[in-house]
Image (tube, rainbow, N blue to C red; front, side, top):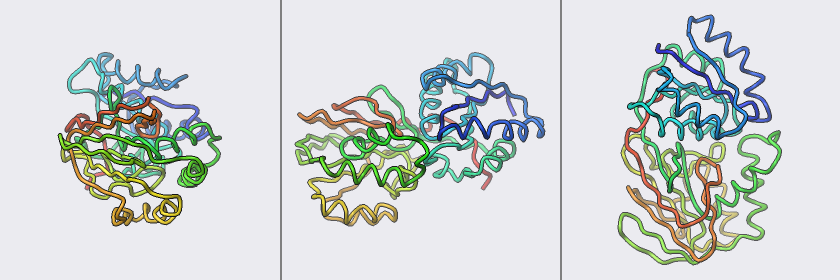
Length: 297
């Protein structure tokens, strides 16, 4: 394996990545993997280290943390000074871990470490919203407001639970807004509850938002809901875990290469659960943009 650098997020999942790292590091060292490591002090620092990794002679960047850590690492790799950028490896130590889930990377850190040692390499798409890249799902509207809320909560609340609680609290005050969406050149004006542009199937710790998403088809799976009432939202919510929410008459889905959302109201935008601004939002896909180490088939 090529020379590697591990980027460790010490605050991921209330410090779980920091606590787990010594054992993970020993597993990798014992197997003969040569690597350096850096513990970041901010998400931007992680992005910068990933961006510089190729130029510094690293062929592999190991992201140690959750989907937020992977988000910043991917953004660094997409800004790499070398082409192609270094290969991405993941040790999932976060709250949701949706990106490794979609690639069948073990959520157990020791098993994930073994995957780095004996896995195969898979080239995958990366999504883009405005000037930010995303690995899983980006969106505007209700789910972005939920992400904005739960990102301020303590990290001892883990997994899907935190997102369900955020949904219920956001539902109290959220209202659909007048919006203008353009999907591959086709325009619609509607009352928008949310729009998700998906590179992968899952987000929110296991919500099956986009069953029709593929990480290597050069397309985004688009899901958008119109003027759902509070009662309709509560009825649809449990179905998101099985993908049956797509059967609701107020939920539409398609695939696209280019999506734009405009609205008079300042709708928040999230990317991999990170808040990245407000509309207008332009979503695109960068086909086969990065290489990831995954388990052998």
